Image 1 (tube, helix red, strand yellow):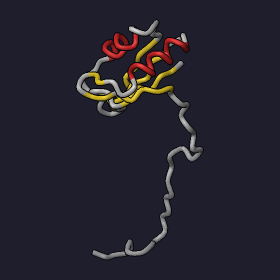
Image 2 (cartoon, rainbow, N blue to C red):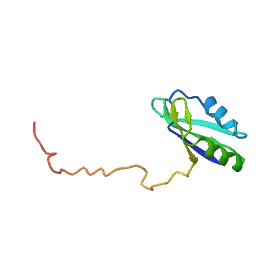
Image 3 (cartoon, rainbow, N blue to C red):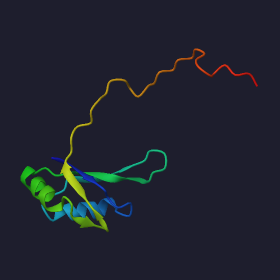
Length: 103
């Protein structure tokens, strides 16, 4: 089961997160999600545990628990939703209201 860990301290390391969840069972992986441009933590992690009962115990025990001076948000990770638009945008190149100023 994949577990979402939100409101994570920016000081937390992947090892810190893994150690926290290891109290409840074997942790397959603990990955802090980082900004792709700066490399800094985005304040959340994904923890993978193979045993669902251990994962559910960890969720129940750690949700809203203080860790590194922040109250964690811990729940089962939901799959990312694909909006289908690819993040594009409406690139209307026509002259619209106020865009035709002369300097």
